[in-house]
Every structure is written in structure tokens, then in C-alpha cells.
Length: 208
Image (cartoon, rainbow, N blue to C red; front, top):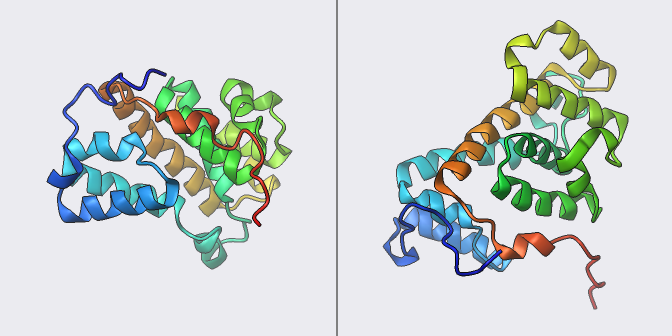
């Protein structure tokens, strides 16, 4: 990717011009990651929508594993890596370069598997994942491509792999939310950060 290509076809505000809450969140991400993911800047073109987007994003991806499931069902909950698998598989179907690259990087980091993101993006049915994860992605892809056909048999299949109805909600909600994200990224011509392409592809050296 050329570093000189724009990160969005829409105007991207300067950090100093952003509302304080957006600027604070973006600086926190920069401090943690070492760079600012372009999605934070591109969507800041509309601050009110940025806030709504990030609030739902955090509700889906930053809650404790199985926190809702533990209250209402017997499922195992979704790991952080599994949530990223859903994003990568469905974003690949939606041909969203930004989300496949960015969340593929996060998937590699969470799973500590340099090859898994490419495998899931191209053909998750041949990826080095568990049968449980394959069933999860089958369900996610059905929600992504033919949600009107989801029925009780799909929930039964998930249950056979240890997923509760609340887990199914999580799988479907992540798929649906990133359907929005995929379309906005494609609409705006959002460019993945160069840093994402290499993240998680080689093991990190042990800390001294």
C-alpha cells in the first residue's frame, strides 16, 4: 500500500479540531497500539455517528468472554479471537479490504497463529480452526448472506458445539455490525494502515 494514498475519499479532520472525547479516545488508542487506526480518523468526519459506531463496537468486542451467557445460558461464550474470526470471514465475503486487513492483524495477535487470518479470509472451511469455530463461522456466514433463512435448526447445530442462544446473538450481532462497517469502509475508500499488514506474522521476542 502506498503511504501517500488518502485514508478516505471524505475529508479527514485534524486531531486538534476534533471534540475532546474523540481526541482523548484516539490518543489512548495511539498510545496503546503505537499508531492510530485509520478507521478512527475516517469516521470522525461525522462525530455523532463516530460515537454511536464506537459504542456498539465496544459493546460487542470489549465485554468479558461469556459475561451475558454466564447469566442467561450454558454456552461457553466467544473468545476475543473467535470474535475476530467472525469479522474476518464475513468481511472477506463483503470484500472489505480495510476490515480484513485490520481485523486479520488482530486475529493473528489474539490467536498467536501467523497463518490463521489468511486462511479464514480465503476459505475458513479449510482453515486450521476447530470444528466448533467452523460451526460458528458457518452460522455467521448464513447471517451475512441469507439471514432470512436462519431457523431453529441453525441454533440446534450451534448448541451441539457448545454455543448458547446468547452466543448465537453475539455471532449474529458481530456479523451485522461489521456488515455496516464493511459498507462504510468501502463507501469511503478507507485505506488500511500499513502497520496492520505485518502485525502478528512473526513471533514477538521474549521480554527481557
